[in-house]
Length: 151
Image (cartoon, rainbow, N blue to C red):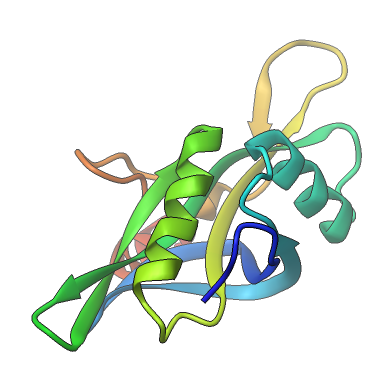
């Protein structure tokens, strides 16, 4: 779908969580923004673009970026997995998946951001119900865990 210089529309979910569904996972959010990504974009540049689009102040920083990764199952079926984006090469991998699946017309990301305290170096979570639980392959939590956190 995309060439090396072509931008891909990306839906960024925040105040969100990962939910299990019949096609793997999906992102559930109250809010999202649309950003444009290019293959040669760095992770830090992506985070800055998202922060600007969301209107985050300088004390708020993006701590985690999760990609809704497409996995082929059989000849024409696919499921989604949550994959944490940790470095610039992970962004290249997103575009590699995009090039293998003609049905992908946009990327989906979920971000977790935190408020940094101005008086100390400690980090406070702005939304405790959106904290991420770590698993072996990805960082996410399910809808049932989300409901348990918010009660």
